[in-house]
Amino acid sequence: MKSTSIRFGAFLCFAVLTGSSCFASDPPKVIELSLALKKEKVPVELHIYPTVGHGYGLRRTKELVTTWPDRVADWLRARGLLETK
Image 1 (cartoon, rainbow, N blue to C red):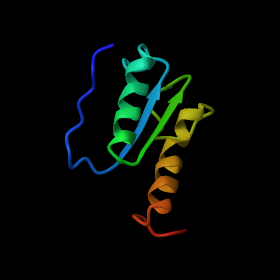
Image 2: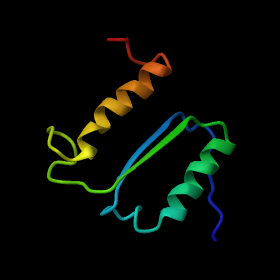
Image 3: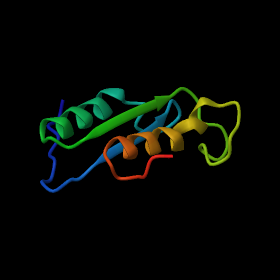
Image 4: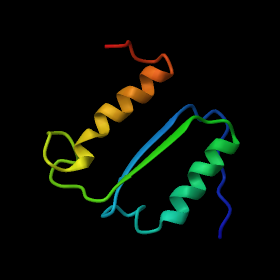
């Protein structure tokens, strides 16, 4: 597996992927990137949803991926970057 280089100064990483995205087709690379970020003490959170649906979660549907905006808001609140509800 090719080495992953991370630039210093990276701040935060919240990644949302779906089973149909290009990164989800090669999960080891996504996991490798997440681990490399973590090694550099970059806060990282990765969500891989099984399906995408139309609009990628910009409108609520029955698809689980439509909850990603809530997940990122929770993540930002946990870091004090977004006011609590």
